[in-house]
Length: 112
Image (cartoon, rainbow, N blue to C red; front, side, top):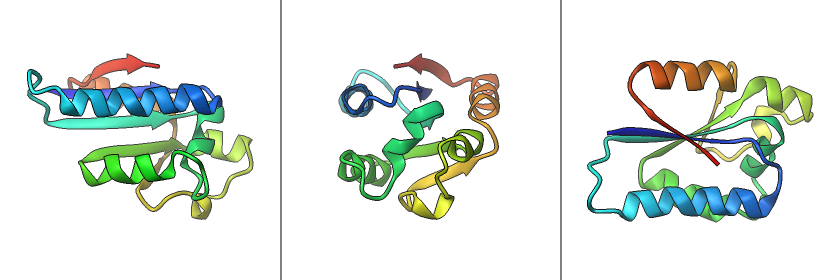
């Protein structure tokens, strides 16, 4: 099973809850997971900055196979250069495009 989490909120508490939900899914032995992706757009892309409070949790989840993706359109809108992001984050051409691609290949969609 494949799952994609979608986050748009710039609120650090919302972002922390989203990351916690990813961790909970990974820990659930009753779900056979193949791939987990986490797509951030809008102001949520700030959570991927190197100095962000959630950076350690993002690194840990990435080590456990979660693919983190940031919308390039959103990065431009909030004036963040890709070089400012954690190394575990892939910049995609658009968050909506990535979500569409993933869902078209069978990913379950969870918006937080």
